[in-house]
Length: 160
Image (cartoon, rainbow, N blue to C red; front, side, top):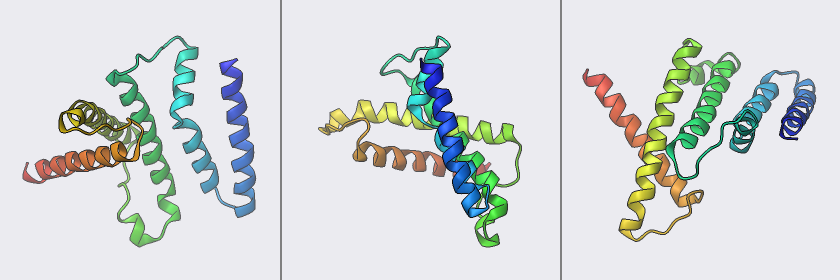
């Protein structure tokens, strides 16, 4: 039944975003629909469960896989939209790079985010914070930790 649900969702996304793409005469809605479809963490878990891969709760593997899918999808969406944005914005977007480079960057960031999440889950109770793992406070702290790790990485690249 899970396979039918995934195919039904894919068909629904294709039809919905295809109609929107026809109305606006642009491929951007199709790209956005593909991004939403492929980066849904529940769908990823369902699809992997269908082929026999089960996620263990409170481990780092599911966080890496779900973050990688989201980040790779986000970078692929940005790369596909680069020709459609104004020149001043395109200068700030990803450079023309191969898909393997984009996948490597997404994997690196997913690993950093997963370890930051793990560290946050262990450190917050020490400071007396009781926060849900999917709450706004945790998302904000994860963002700050990820930005700090990226700043540190950029500093190391500049110095090296």
